[in-house]
Length: 415
Image 1: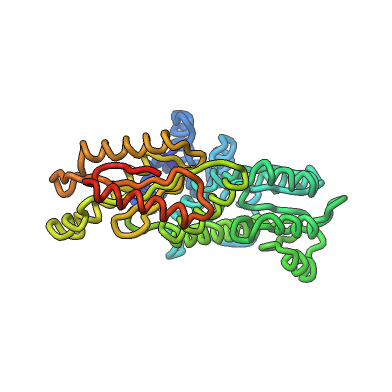
Image 2 (image 1 turned 90 degrees about the horizontal axis):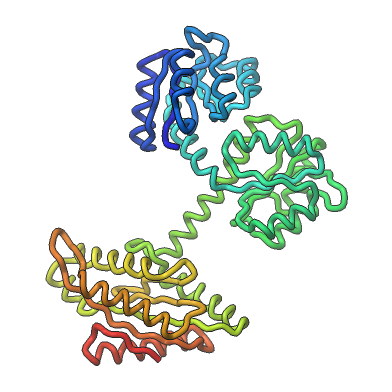
């Protein structure tokens, strides 16, 4: 879904919001200025809207009736209000909305964009809620589902650990302290033995919350703590902050492991991950192939057409290799015009066949740069036997590449 409903009786403010969301998020915007117009749009919309931005006071619905309409249709709602007060805040949160935004704030539009961007990403985020009370789990689950998270539940520490085994991509665990068998401290400690803070966040919750409780959760490895009864606004802030911190760490890790030009893994990642993979395959008595790939006469491209043309050649060769290999393979730009691939579970014939298909495809089509087609060929050396170390395999593949170059280029030599 890429449509958003904006219900606002101020045409000026509604148009500002619509323009901002369309420009920055590429969303389609449906606008209404009354309850009746909004109802007609919702009933006509198939499938439902991604979410709705709602003015709390409309000419034909001055008591916030629009919020009940939208949430009853299962559409996440963000509420606009111009009169902040504790009473109004409590009323808005009682409606189980995503959030509320103050119209007067200079940062209102930026906040809305960031909030919608987060909600769209949340559908891919798994959160595990651990509490022996079904009622308490349900309350937390409902809050998370308003923000579109995928929610899993466990009624004990043992169930939680089993859930993490089944779903290792869980990003956040929210655990109560008081549970029979394994309390929240023990569960947190056990989770931290298996999952680092960089890969998974833990938020402790408790009705006995105080500074000591929060500190003990943190000392056992928790990322954050929330008191019961849960205050929705605080809860969402803490959950979002922890998820966004994990996202930030992932972006940093990707930047450290990725070649900026081609988007492939870089040399650092290939060496580190490649040796780990080789060790794992060796332990399991399985095979792999390592290929070293060199673009023939690449210096000539840079010298005659310029480095921008050379960069485009590198990008297109990178895309070609990604198209021919899978996520199980480590495809990297090793440096300059050299690429390396480590393909686990590879039989010699299969790996060479895939590489040959890629080589022939490039030789036939060449590379398009600034409207002109450049003939590009590849020389490839392949070590098809798992070595004692990754360096051993690299040396063997390099020797094959050297032979391919000296034998006329545009070919594969295997060992």
